[in-house]
Length: 299
Length: 316
Image (tube, rainbow over all chains, first blue to last red; front, side, top):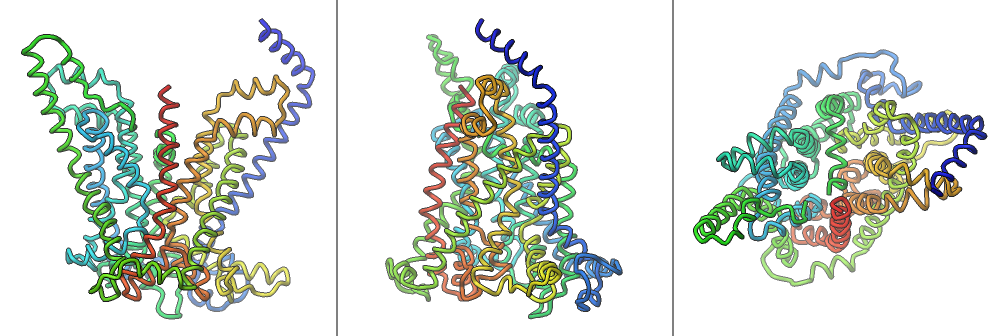
C-alpha cells in the first residue's frame, strides 16, 4: 500500500518537473553522443592513418612535406606490389593454412570435450573443467621457451606445422569453456528423449547438441580464428625463413630491411592482413560480442 | 559450467530396488563414463603435452647452466635478481600492467556508461566502431603506432610542429617510451572493458534505479550504491583477467621499442625472448618467464573464485 502511495507521489512530482527533466535528459543524450564521438575519433586515428599511408607512393612519403594526415596523390601501387609479391602470397597462404587447421582441430577437440564434461561426466571431470579454465589463463609468453626446446626435439623448428600443433593450446581452453556453457543450457529432456529412442552419444551430439548450440559454435570458431590469425610470439620465436612465415612476422621481417622502412608497403600489408578479421567482425559482430562476454558472464 | 551439471542422466534410474536392472544400469553407467573419458582424451593429451609438461620442463630448464650441461639449482634466479636490468624489468612490468589496467578500466567504464545513455537501436553502430581496435591483430596495429611515433616526419610530431612545439623523440627517451607503450595497450584493450561493462550494465534491473530515484538518490549515489555493487563481480573478473593478459604482453613492447632505450621498456615477456631466444641462453630465459608465475597464479586464483561465485549467483 505504501508502495502505491509512493509511486503516486513520484508520478505527481514527475509531472511537475517534466519540462526540466525532459530538457535534462536531452542534454545528457547529446552530451553522450558528443563524448562518444570524441572517443570514436580517438580510437579510429591509427586505422585511419594506416589507410592514408597505404595510399601514398614512396616518393610522397619520402618528400616529407605537408601534412602526413592527408594523401595528395592516392595510388594503389603498394597494394598491387604486395598482391604480386611472391613472398607476401606465401605469408598469406601460410596464415590461411595454419588458421584453418587450428580452427578445425580446436573445434573438434573442444566440442567433444565440452559434450562429455557438460553431460556425461566421469571420475575427475569436475577437476578437468576447472583445470581447462586455468589453462585458459596461461599466457603464451609463459611457456614459449620450454616449447622452443620441445618443438626443436620434434624437428619442427622453422616449420609452419609447429604452429598448427601449438595454437590449439591457446584456443581450445576458451572454446571448451564457452561450449560447456552453451551445452549446459540445453534442456536435459532433449537428450533423455533421444536416449530412450535408442540414439548413441555421438548421434545425440551430432543431431541435437551441435544444431542447437550453433551460436556458441560460431562464437568459439571466431575466437579460435582470431587467436590463430593474430598470434605473434610463437611464429616470431620458431620461424626464421620467409617460405615458412605467417603474415604477422612476415610483414615485419620482410618489409623492414635494416634502417629502410617502406612505410607505404608496410601499411598496405597491415590493411590486407587485417582484412579477414575485420570482414568476419563486420558480418558476425553479434556472435563476436557474445563470445567476448561469454568468458565472464556465462561463467 | 563447473558446478554439478555433469551428473550423468541415466544413473538416476539406478536407485530402483530391482536386482537385474541395477546391474545393467551399472554397466550402462560404466560404459557411459568410458565414452565420456574417451571424448575428453584429445583435450587431456593436448593440455598434458603442451601445457603441463612444458611447465615442469621450464622449471627443470631454469636450473641448468647456459650450455645446459650442469645443474645449478636456483643459481639463475639469484643471478637474475642481482642484475640491475632485471630489477628494471620487474618494475616496468608492474608499472605497465597496473597503469594500463587502471586506465583501461576507467575509460571502459566511462564509455560503457555513455553508451548506456543512448537509445538501444543506435548502440550497435557506435559499439561497432569502438570495437575496431580490438579486432585488428595487435601486432599489425602496433606497426601503425610505431609509424605514428616516428621521430622525424610523423603524424604526432607534425601536429606538434603546427602548434609551434619541437619534435618529441617518442620512443627514444625512457619515460616517454614507457608512456607510449602503455598508451598503445590502453588503446587496444579499452574496447574489451567497454563491452564487458556494457553487458553488465544491461543486466542491472531497472527497478533498482527507480527505487533509488524514489528514495531521492542523485546520479552519483545511484552510481556508488546501485551500479557499482551490482557490477562488482564483473569488474573484478575483467580487471584480473586483463591484468594477466597485460602483465604477460609481448607484441607491443617487442615491436615499438624491443626493450630499449637502455632496457627501460622491457617487460618479462620481451626480456625472456631476448635472453632465451636471441642470446641463446635458454635456461636463463626460462627463469625470466617463470618469474611471472607467482603473480599469474595469484590473479588466476581470484578470477576462478569470482567466476565460481558468479555461476552460483546465476544458478540461484
